Image (tube, rainbow, N blue to C red; front, side, top):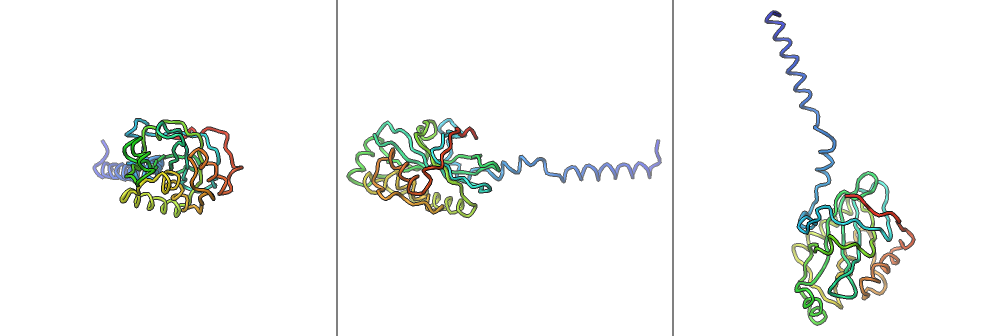
Length: 224
């Protein structure tokens, strides 16, 4: 058996080694997950049965290397109105410019079809959280623009302000197109010259108005 003093030295050495191991971060993956935690989880698609949201084939893509976040303007089919629906997806990007989170917001009148057509006469209360269709339908068009951290924080501020005080929906005044475009201002984007267009043409006019008509992506975004 080793002398008592030697035992003490060995025990101290083992204790120091264990302490050193515990001081090392568990993994860089844990750090990344924390960094990309959704800032507004109520705008995720988990409640609609699709936690990661829906991928989209991009019609236009203005993603700058190194930008940490993005905003994406989408247009989809709507069973209630022939013009379709425009909404926004936003979140964080990884080092390769692919989304690692998807949060959704859009302006859609409460009351389904009654709210839609009632909004042609009077302003209607609206929902801002994603619907089943937002989370599951394949978009007809999608326009992605990357954001700096400062721009993304401005976007989050605007989202939170709208959640706290939802705007009213008006078919011929402030509809889903105008609501979506209001977020584009954080990146210097502007509405088309004729903002009173149906969603199925508004999305393309919006891309054109911001000089990104030729920036097309032919690959489907499979990121989660």
